[in-house]
Image (cartoon, rainbow, N blue to C red; front, side, top):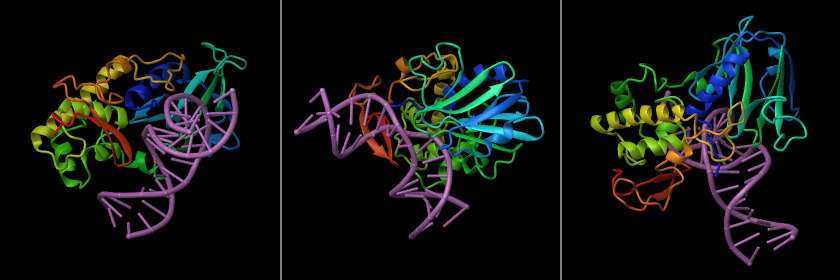
Length: 273
DNA sequence: AGATCGGCCTGGACGC
DNA sequence: TGCGTCCAGGCCGATC
């Protein structure tokens, strides 16, 4: 059972990184020689202006017209060297794939499974990052419009859950919150071309489950950690994801796990239609 | 252009 | 106990 950083987890990381990094200069960058990062060395010598987020991407504009784009992948985490038990010789100090020497701190990027990505691009130029360049609206902003969501859901031939995971209809929803939102909206993950009523319920449920998880600083099973090493508190509130075999809180039916679009999917076969 | 599918990567769970 | 196998899964690139 992994724990994948999705929008609430990435936002929780962003909130801890921004105050520490904004205004700080990157003196040097050290990279795992096996890592396939994109031109991260170019960040050296540049000042970080802010740490922002789009979907599951962390975006750090640098002075000189550059931008550091970061994705945590499956197991990525940022930790400050020598803080909160993160130091050579301490338990758990391992799998460091990149290190940023800053003015007054050393920031490590830990990533056990190496799915994470770090890239430096010209500011705003995401042409080489397909998912980011075609990313849908931020779910918690006014850009996430219910009418447009319905139209786009009706246009695709995909089942609703795989469609959500493409990041094109809405940004930042992954496997956990897709299952949670579909359960809350009582929509079957394999449904297609939702009615406006169902699509509106799903639209609202996506916003709710993400906002509630941000309040709890995300969902931790094992891997996801905030920058200070702490776990998020949302795992105890999951109703669908990882709950196969448990009774549906709405009607008591045993929750079923299937594979849909290559992803584990848990839902109530009775009330999610 | 949209949809689908395999590959990437590693540790933990599981079976014998 | 120890070894082998399977699974998790976001994104990317190839293919249809």
